[in-house]
Amino acid sequence: MQWYEKLFENYAKQYDREPFTQGTVGECDFIEQELNYDRTIKIIDIGCGTGRHAIELTKRGYSVTGIDLSEAQLRRAREKARKENLLIEFLRYDARNLPFENEFDAAIMLCEGAFPLMETDEMNFQILQNVAKALKAPGKFIFTTLNGLYRLFHSSLNAPNEYFDFMTMRSRDLLIFTDDDGNQHQIVVSERYYIPSEITWLLKSLGFHTIDIFGARLGAFSRKHRLTTEDFEMLVIAEK
Image (cartoon, rainbow, N blue to C red):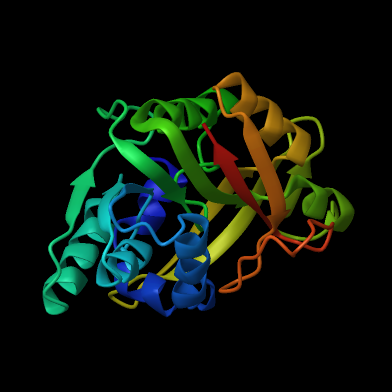
């Protein structure tokens, strides 16, 4: 079992309490603006987790399909949607192998949803390939990912429980977390940090012709936020 499978097997309620999940409304404001408030479009939410963006966008009148690898996260998403009397399709798929082709007008992948959690660069690239395949042309892809510039400038090689490999741009950090039953766990989180030029090249190789990258601010995505070494995440907006 990979670390992300272990983390999310019993972490849905606790996940919804995490500070980094509290910016949903502001983030959906930005998504709506980017989509020109066109409620006729179909959106796929990749790595949807407990469905917070899918649910908020559905409330606003959009058609959203949520996909995730974790059945526990999806179960929580379905429960929340039912309480809101919302009909949302939440499906269990691996983002490296999606069945969709030219089906969606827009894709979102936020808060490290799937990418860049995979074990290899090739697997992370497979996720981007599957997003590109699922999107129509024209289509828009909005996602956040870890900012390699931040980790390069803030790397603490001697810090306990942290390691960053400059050659592979991969981290190995100890995470201690409490699951939904109150049990404490320790796992080693391994994630891939990307620099903007890598993201641009990867997306251009998949047929995206316009790629804009900004600093991702929790609950306040904006094209006005120039990416800096102080931004933990990048906000990427790509168009086919």
